[in-house]
Image 1 (cartoon, rainbow, N blue to C red):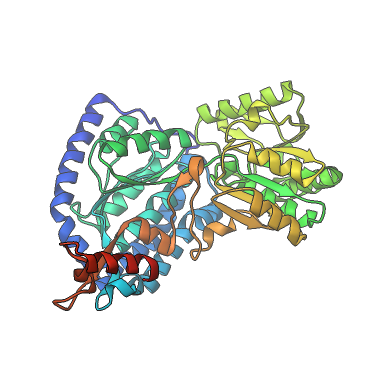
Image 2 (tube, rainbow, N blue to C red):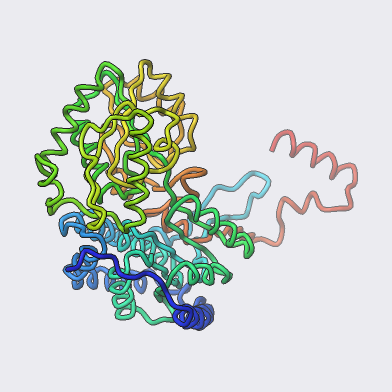
Length: 486
């Protein structure tokens, strides 16, 4: 299939058609939301199983679409797009009945006689806006949570992965009526129009810059948001780390999907005495994964392409500026921009205040900085925005505890990279600039649910009535007693 990215420009007529369709779909789903919200666990499970079966049916088509968009290897599609989505579905199916049960809570002394519970209820009509880097997974995984929670949903995939977006539109139309789940294609103008609607929840995956725009738009309607963003995810390698294992796992975590992963290791902080050996092992691992020579790596069937020429040019500029500031290219650095290829690239002698250390790289370029004391590495991390992920390679428990205590991140892996994404018992998401809210499993279900507080007073009399007005002396005495003892 072609390696070129399809035209992502939408004509004014196409945008106008899309906005009319959005008006229609939003009204349709608003009308149907209450029926969907009252659906049973069995009904929602049937929908999830239908989604599961359809994904298996379209497996090869999904692989073809992602190859067309950025030449992603089929094995990588299975591992990073299809498997985590199916895992999300299976986990929801296995646990949904328990998630939907009212959760009883204790009763304080002042409210003796009453009972209370938390009832998860659907938020209503939700908007899911997905990014292009894992377009299938990032669109369908939150949809699983939305369905489990009993919502209607409109999906807006990225226009930068048009083949995948088109395929997902076909799949959604086959699986669901439009008054329940629908997909809208379009560019940023279509996204802006969607954000004007008073959705009950917005789940957005993308850059921090666009996340701010989404949050600002949501604020106008007091819409709750989940923002899955990104940032510069650091990796610390201390003097006790198993360097061979670290090199293998970092090479995989960084160069999967050509580095276009929001939780990819963005830069390495390695203890100065271990730097050269680590770089040597890292280079050997890159050669093992993708080929010994630059030409072999260019022709490797296991290395994806950058999504667009624009992103290629941005990465090329970052590499050029880093070299101009004294950075050394230890491997890679070769490019074939017409093929949207940038080789797996490792830089050393990178200055902490260089351009490449100021913005998320989001590509196959890995800066390495050395540190003398662990406090220096921690200080550098503290000076930057809180990242979506932080990776620690160490055999020293005290070092690990110190890093965890003195940094903040959405998630952390110790002696591995990326794999916390696949652990559905853990919440996935960022903190502050790297995101708001959590996804996956029960945490994703909660994001698309309102935790409704319910108190039931079964008797005609309650203890609180003893403190009703008029506030005579005995009532005041009881209130004072309650403040002190109850």
